[in-house]
Length: 321
Image (tube, rainbow, N blue to C red; front, side):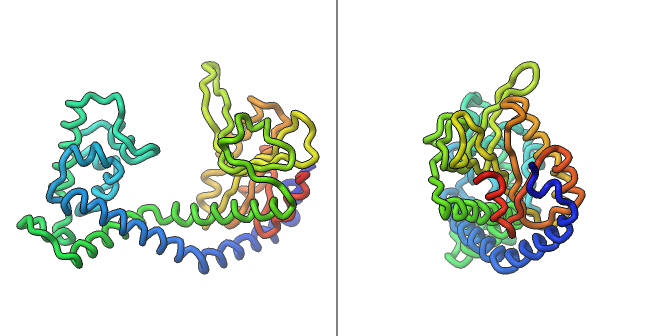
């Protein structure tokens, strides 16, 4: 039996409350989350500048050992260049640049050493050719910058980095708060938290326990390709029978209505993949806060997905917790 998906008469009221809830949080906490990230990023940029002798000594060896500084270098140019633009301008392998910036942030382990040095050299030449002379004004005569100049440059580059990922910064802070709220609700009811490394199979989660950020393996298509579906929270009810299915929870927040409707198919795809591998007994719900309109809710309800609003967290109990 559904908890919220089958009650469209109260969707409008819940949407209004959720929007107000999100806006109150954003005004109070989002600026701090951004400032904290900005402060940390300034320190990281200052460290990267020291590694490169303030861009005066930038060579392939430095990039091989510190591939994670590449986003900072892209934001050091005039104008700042996007990842794909750098790939095109420097005529280098997309795999190289994406490996340095996404995921493990490493040099592709199987890349030929000679080719690697050549492509890193191209990246460096393009970065230095486009380096923002107004920020790094010491490069013109290759002098050592003052402490104030170096800090000012690091601050500007950090602002560019944070500006490019402002939405993810806020989204991450909101998700952390949502997860903390779920945890507090469960622990108040004597549920025990388990670390992901302690769970070999999500179906073996002990009754009365929960885990965050655990992957569920699924097989896709005729080729039976194996992929992992990340789940924000899993809870095995206290009264679960042997071999029972945990409740899977996806924490979602949104600061506008447009993006939610663009991405509403993601959850439908996810639950379809889970059910095709583990059966119709899979229980997958959303934990919502923010701008989710009736169009979004109706789509999810039609796909058999229920939800709990953050402003009414006690609805979790209606799912047998």
